[in-house]
Length: 211
Image (cartoon, rainbow, N blue to C red; front, side):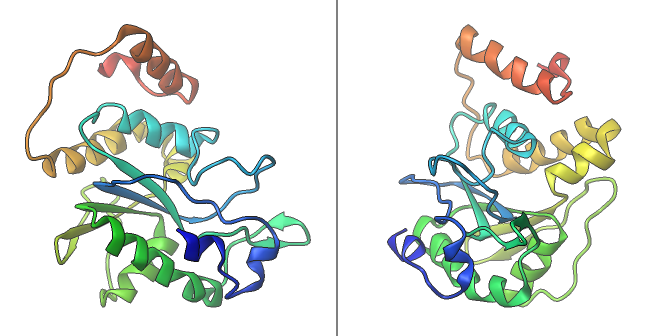
């Protein structure tokens, strides 16, 4: 993590401190594109403060026996005229080695690549030049070593453009996670915590009846 924090490979480090999640173990990665603007320096990638993060967090909640790690392909904040922009290919190239280091460090079983830009760039780094994002969420997977890479639609795309099919998307992602599990752990849920996650799903239009 120190290499990420101290990185000066491009000028994006001048915009904002890199966003990283501190953790010691990770079975599953979520990889977004780039950092968002924060005010207190205490946020993490794909934060629950965003709708994307809320959706991811609500999925994670039902896999208490799994450890999750959120990161971005580009750790810093891309800006143009003080407005967030997409990172350039050069910036992604500068930063992808940090992602590879994270993968090497944590050795996750599963990596979700969120959206076309992330999936295209990362998969090409591993030699996959062509892939598809299935419109019915029947996602393809690519195995490298002991890690499964799965490109999926970005949650924000689903929330904005495919909201009527949100439950299909969630079930597809949950199925992929479930298939990586060694065994199911059916621990009783603590009611106050469960209620808070019902509220999270309800706040972004998720179907709480699926519980």
